[in-house]
Length: 296
Image (cartoon, rainbow, N blue to C red; front, side, top):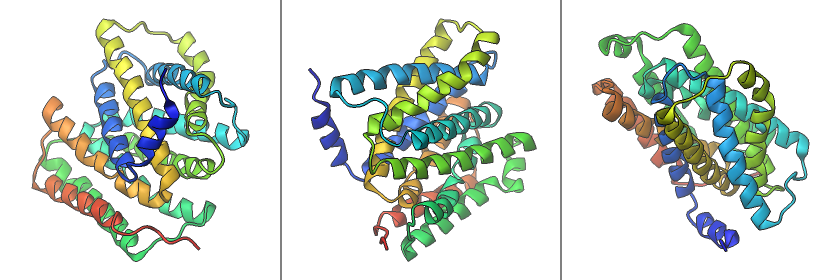
């Protein structure tokens, strides 16, 4: 029988590396989404992802013999709503933009997290983290500048950018919610509410507009479920052990991973501007890990 307590203890000992693993697995999730034909609707992909995640999480909760409904149910439901909204927006952005660009826009969320964490959970930002956020944000702006996009012959619709930014805001709010819940809730209960809310809200839409995936698409859909589950697990444990704003800055690494997959698998062009921006993002990540945020 699997000893989940022992596994959790070992994962907890990884400290900040939890967020690195989370970024890596989430980047593999985006790779899977990008490989699925557009005939499968976005909400159906989120539905399948949620179904697989819920099955895995419920089995772990049952094995651990814990209360599956948690304590702060209203906040847990809110986390599920925010996570579902963010995921739909992110999947839309991935499908309608180059993978590298959609990942970069998604990772504007740390600046929103810094704001929301200060408002809702009273986190303070050290000088190191403040500069890390600025450097990371500057790197993203360099990558997204109009000259960069025209040089690589990319046209992005404004609606896609707006939806991607909305996904970033929802992601930031979800991070702060998870951080607050981690004080009183088991990590797998927090994870469970995400797919549970997704299934409840998306089931009617999916059933009415059902599209049967083929074998190849099923393989990629399973990949979405597995990699998202792994990402959520490492993310939730990481947020439990680190301030939300610092954790989010470490997750800038997904920009690097997403850009690499776009280059290797979709022949997306990476020029000097992109490399410079990515370097600044990485520098921000390193700087953010040099000192823990001081709490009041």
